[in-house]
Image (cartoon, rainbow, N blue to C red; front, side, top):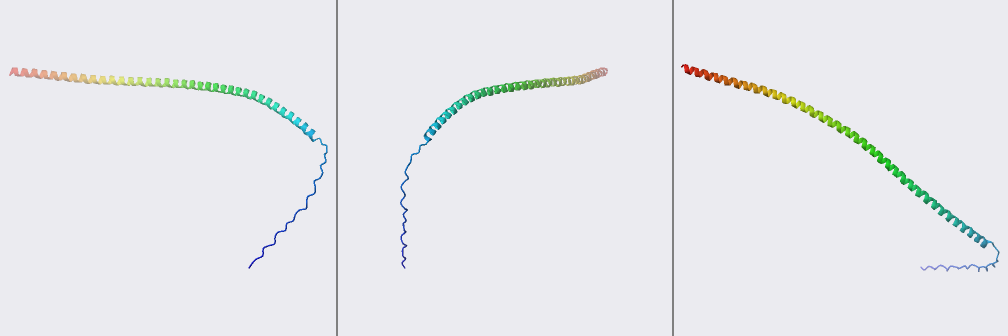
Length: 161
């Protein structure tokens, strides 16, 4: 079954354009106005640049002074911090010295008490030892006399016999 192809498209052409309109010269002030505007714009740009440069110099002076003031403030703060640290260190040293002296004093007191106690104990021991020594010596002496007396009695008894 054969199909028929569609008919070719119809091309519609536009009508020919009319001839351009004739140019008419009209006198204007655009050129003089633009020239005057360019001059004013140039003056304004120069004025802006001068003011910008002046502002830059003012800012440079201000910020240089600001940097100097900032450095001076930092130095003053540093000196105050160092002074405060020194005061705190000296106060701490004073307290530590007082504590050390109190500790040394207490240590000495305890040492002297220990010596006193040791001395009392040594004297008591010496007394006791002396007492025991005297008792022992007395017992020895009594035993010696007993033996001597017994030997004498034995000798007398043998002489008589």
